[in-house]
Length: 182
Image (cartoon, rainbow, N blue to C red; front, top):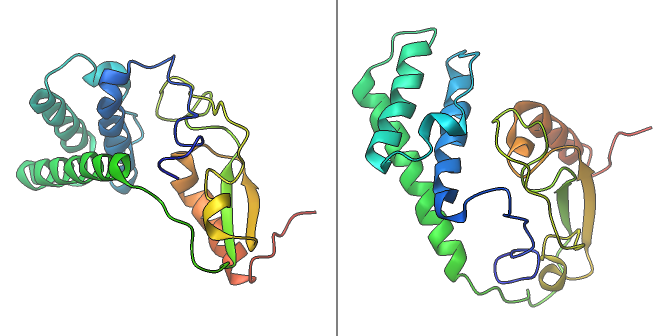
């Protein structure tokens, strides 16, 4: 939750904070790569140190050049740029966000990424970024009330959005929140 200790509890020592948005481009490239059956991964070194316009071109070229289908470069460029601008805008909005507690407790299930913000050996080739705080509610605990349930998910902040994790989350929701673990 923005504005909480959990928000500032990410170990950024392995990453140049000034290049934090570069990480977004790697994640965008690799997320779209999955759509077009691209087996290679865009790596941080592919875009690090380049001007933003060149970074966007590199991501677009990566996708168009390796896709299993013919892609229109202009359309992919628009998609990459638009996604990047949404992420940057979202990050800016989150930085300004001031959370307030809900008026009453709401039953809430939070899936906690046990591998931290960026886990070791992640498929995006990003440096590991651990969580420094011990707040397993990610800052939400003080805002949603007593109805909060935290469930571990063996993922990081980004890989929790991969198909296998989404499938597990959907299964838990379909069962009414009951984990299917022995």
